[in-house]
Image (cartoon, rainbow, N blue to C red; front, side, top):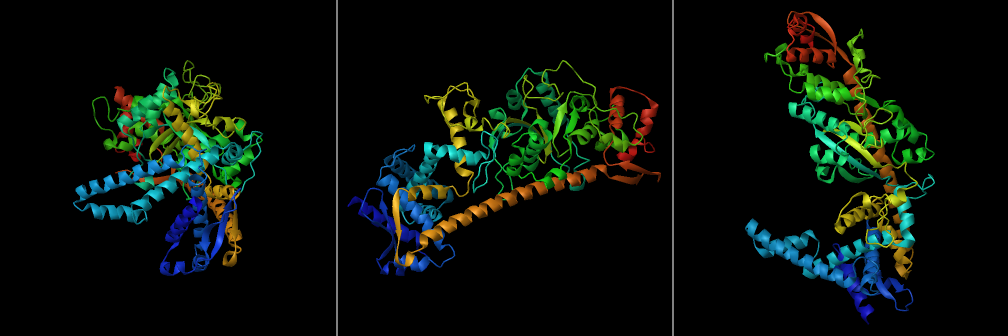
Length: 610
């Protein structure tokens, strides 16, 4: 009898949720056309009446509504009637939790009434309406189902029968480097750390690629961040905690798991950050580019031949000396006596010349232990910007540069630090776990906790990436992995539906014959649509990024003709040559060279750039 009582409650809930404008006519017939029989039972439980089906079968979202409610009934049946206890919470625990949630909402209504100068009844009604329920019991039942669904989704992702296959689909690459065959698009996860030094873009959008400015404080922070990293006294995490202006600073720069989700036409991180990492890892790292899994990984990240051809052929190498000089030149805004040069133009401040030449770039760069390239022999100032770093080592004693001469995040010479400029400033990024470590990805994204018998503290994983005496810290990281795995597939709920269908026998009869096939077709179409949106989303973000790089290239390479106050014309590069910064700084340090001073006067060569 208990099951029959439940079925009546569920059908009532089904009718209430389904009711649109014709709700008064829905219950005129009691003929059941959709029923289910639990496994091992002979009792049929009514799901849908013929009038209900006939009312909604031809509406635009009728099939999806039928699917939603059938799934709800099956999930609630598992918890309430079959006492589902394999998840993190059972029904009684969920019910208690839901009652507390309702109490919190009632307290919220009281607080809102006081702060808004309204009545409790008005605020409570508003809360009920926002949740699309009629009373406290309806709100409780809503909370119960939402939590039941969450618990079952997590259980499904952890269940031994499903976990391995689901994780394979999430990763997209098997341990042997072959692509996972699936009807959903893989998340292609990366684990990332980063440091952000904030710098605004130029207020004039037309000048943002070649005439940006940085403050003295920003210049010093940029220099201090990199020189501290290179010095080796502090880890990347410690430097992030000290200097990063991002919210991840408190976590040592750990921004967690980054996925390729782009169905909305946007990524989780800004394009320069995320696509810059993809470009470096897939195109500029020679070892990865030669990997047998490269084609599958690039496809999953949307790196087509068209994208590859639109990106620069090589990664930019920025000399370490440029960072040192950024700090050294930060205070220079005039000569030794404080006199302004070239009318006090900020475009000629040494720090801004260095900023625009080396750092105001939206394509990825690496930091090379090198001096700046020699510009003294160049006939055309435009050629100065073609090569930034020389082959001369700046300081061989610095410990954090690897055999290639690139700055890394650790003494072992791994984890090359990748830089990029976005609208927010300079990002220094480290790939903690790349898709090219595909042999170990399944282990890396394991969700075992230190309290589990088979947890190995020596196994490198996202969960034990941290060191903490608090189990909750590990649990949060495990939950982060679970959340990513259960949310990468926009059609994840269909997995629960297909699983729960195996636990009962659903019968579609009468007017509802064929509804099961329609629901299956609806699920297939949703999967196809989401796969298309993911592919299209990646195309859009790559196109936006590569078009920005093309505009940047054009803006920085264009020459222009200008005249001084005496009407004398001269053709210039938009980027200010670095020699001007060096000469400016010489005067700041006390040089009295008349020839240098002459170049900053109104008729001098440098005044044209002001």
